[in-house]
Length: 592
Image (cartoon, rainbow, N blue to C red; front, side, top):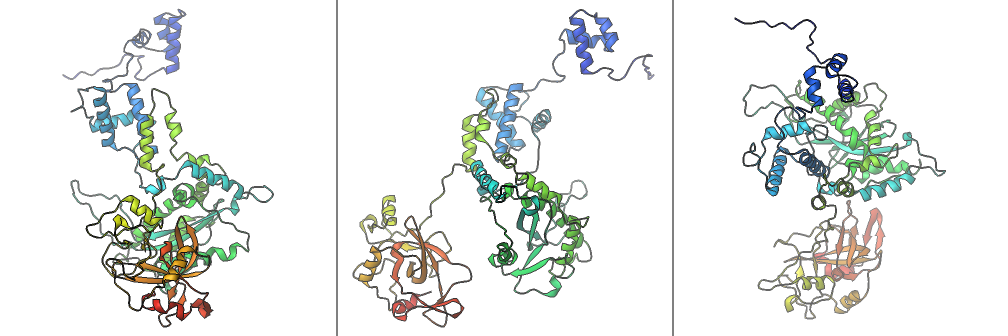
């Protein structure tokens, strides 16, 4: 027979006291002001509870004791925090392996750990015990170049910015006059979404057409939250009227071959009116936009989430059979995005205001940006018991690339079969000493393949020769003689003994394994033995007429590649230049 228990009258089923009452009751009994029973009655505390507290019985926390001591767990928490600040956060497995490594190092064995490796349950319980300091979050990946941003460069940026954000009389520039502009892309991919499936399904999928296509969009807003009209750039040769219909008010459109903003669009949007309206530009440190650009920090994240929801709704409607978002429909979706970004119609963004605050631009506070960067001195100067060793900090600095020395520009070296070279040979060659490699004939630095393709001047690796050609006019090993080419020895000697002059044009030689090509370039400046040249392109119809390419073609060469200084050209219409045919005639076959 099942018994039914009833509580006695007057008994309570809930805690009738708090920690302050318990402490006061303990103090009253210990000082002799009240007896144990009178203190229980006065403070409504059970007799057994008060007796145990006074006698320090059952003082430990309920449950099994932790495998690690409080000091060990505190030190473990500190290490996990530090490595996450330096950009190398632990996952659950890393945390378990760290504990296993520690236990093996100190010679400690924990019976409840199989092979001394904590279980996943232990790791999750560890995070619960220290939820005030640690949490699990989804993280994004950043490139090593962004990780190299140092606190010194950020401090220098804010030192310069402080003066920039002041008027001539020293008064601060108002937030309505401080703007941040940046481009982003609106992709044709609604992204992943959590949906409901049958339990046990191995590959949950949903039907959604998506491509890698995207449309470039530029946003600009002030520290007060005021947003300017949107600027859109399509990847196309021309713009059609249907690509601009149904768009937000005052939105501007343009097009480019790449689909991205270039110098022409920048001039169209900004530079033409900047000087007339007393607008100045402030540059951010390299690779620091994730820390110091308000649009990146607080505006584009919510914007992309809104865009994915709008795109997903469009793809699930009557347009779901479209393989890609076409340019005719883009303005209508951009209009919906505009309405969701500014629901009250004022075209102001509170997120952008928060972005300026987070970046420390307005109100001006560099500590807002610096707190997101790891500080080695702060991490090392901790209490001794909880200290993260300096060796760990040094390792993290190395992994993050803070102290990494910039790499020097590489040069490709060709060595004849059966011969060898040393670093001293290469160094002496780069210095222009003209020494032979391994006592053999002069070697030529060129491309790594055997093709006859031209050499790209935009690459870091510059193809060049290490010394002059022999007096007998012999070509280098692996090279072919170019028909009609005749180098003047006196002219080569004069070029070797004189320095190039700014603004002068020269014939520059580039050598491959089977080709030797020549370009006409204007000398810009010298940089540690390398000469910066800005190259012209030869016209197809006139062999002695040249023009500047649409995209500047700049490269670094060595002095030995400068084969001839040309007389000043005659400037023709349409930014063309005509050089003396007599000076270029022997190079005509190989001129590019």
